[in-house]
Image 1 (cartoon, rainbow, N blue to C red):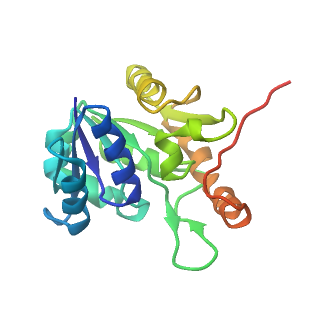
Image 2: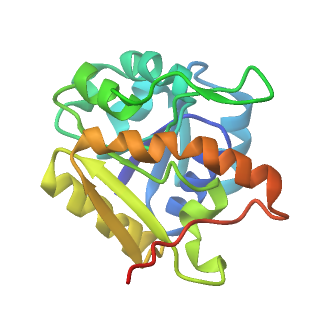
Length: 215
């Protein structure tokens, strides 16, 4: 399958490398069509790994991942082109974080979420929010954790969510996937990031996640 990833940072490269290893053709997209990080990544991963602009990646992918910083996501998707998002599953891993100070804060919360903003801005895209509550290496290798933990999906399109659940389960190895509901439920996982950040500073390892335990 052809997969376009918007972004060229750690999250984009980690997901991209996993997908290439699974035999998919993957293109990383950024503002710079030959961003050094993307070029190095593509050379390391081989002929199934490509790079280009946001628009190139969006045109290329049958399924798309948004792995840009939350503050840049809407601009990146605009550069990708609404016509290239139309009808496609857009897996949104971004978070609306302001990291300019030592104490992080959210730029969107309570009555809205970045996932909702993306869906409103691109109504013909099939946005599914997921993977934003864990570190990049846990996203694609959850079985490295010593216990089974949970990941969440939010989105309006039932068929799109079913496809994303398959990707999470069969490609990445997630065993416990909780469908929270429509895209408005992305508010909860996005707001969790402030707790995630506190945990990251407190715990001895960055590879961790949460587990839902019921009575």
